[in-house]
Image (tube, rainbow, N blue to C red; front, top):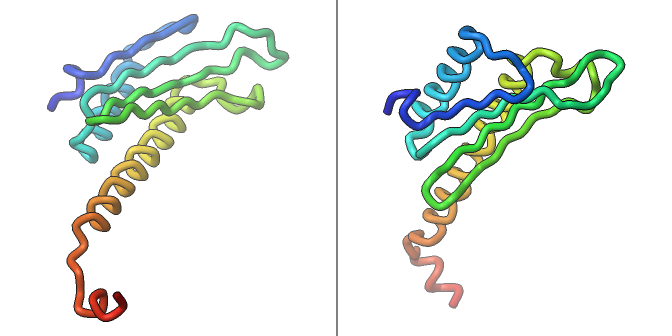
Amino acid sequence: MSGHDSTTVRFYHISQTDKLIKSIYDEARKLKQRHHQIISCAVTVEKQQRRHLKGNPIRAQIRLELPGKVIVSSKKSDHPDEFTSASAALSHAFNAAEHAVSAHLNRCLMVRRDHYRPRLFMDFATE
């Protein structure tokens, strides 16, 4: 699965650069390579339109579609100095998305393991 066919990128109130777009597609491609269950990835980068003493913070949101599940990872700054660069906000959002997908897949794996757990001799002895 290539990085561009199921990845969409949107920018709101922020200028887009080729370097930033390339890094978004690279991160999405890496995430899809680690987790083959990802169907699509939508990335939104926006500068919040509020007045701040030290610039407008940037918010990054990543929406991942998996079979039967949609995971949304959003990182925005509570402190004005925290995410004033888009690359920092995107890095934190992709890390959060990675953890969310891993946790979801681990939960699915545990449910399958418990459901198909073979019964042992000790299980019959306790009944």
